Length: 121
Image (cartoon, rainbow, N blue to C red; front, side, top):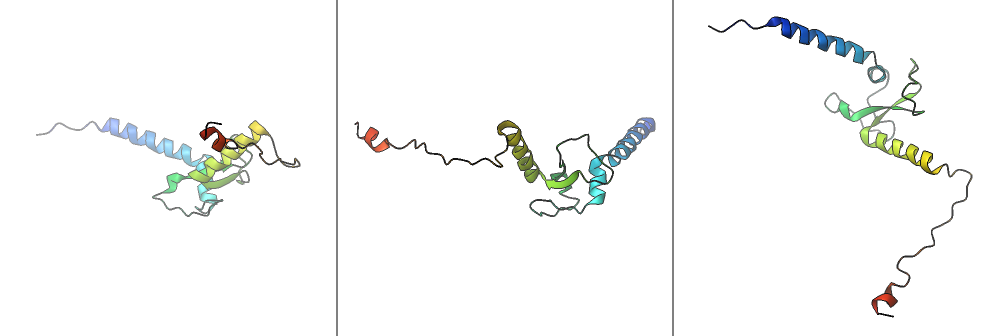
């Protein structure tokens, strides 16, 4: 005959899981997923429950504390487009904006004297 199972531990784990889910659903990710269609806002890739973990919430102003209840600061992006969006923002912070600035074409040619160097001149 087997020993009775300890149901109090299982009850505690299930209660913790229910609390965790309730808190998460109160967060901006769950609100956004309920508000918007499950489509990447950049590449238009569609998502289902099986690959929903690859869809992220992007804060348009890059401020994760700015979470208006109407969702106006959120957009859904796939993980690839989300990484690209943050890379663009990091480059803007690091190098500044190029708007209104005339950019010069690169003139350096690292292979300019390659033939002469290979011939030993």
